[in-house]
Length: 88
Image 1 (cartoon, rainbow, N blue to C red):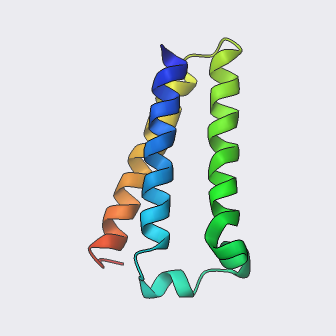
Image 2 (spheres, one colour):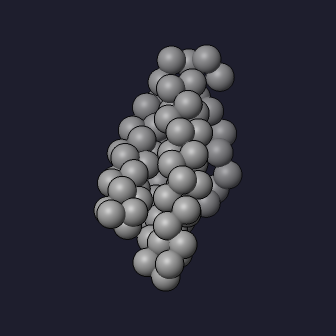
């Protein structure tokens, strides 16, 4: 069950990340070169690596990682909201 929850949170993180990249916020244009490499896909790859690591840790017997990944997702939601509403 924990691996499924982690996977679903990962889907949400990908959606948040993609929408922030497409938001047109001026801050995105100021990001380092590796964020823009391959049209933003390089940063999506790093998001995938984080998800893969979390899922492997859960699969290997550490279900509490789901709680840490949930916290990571909450911070992503907050950051995306700040960017969408132009509060940063």
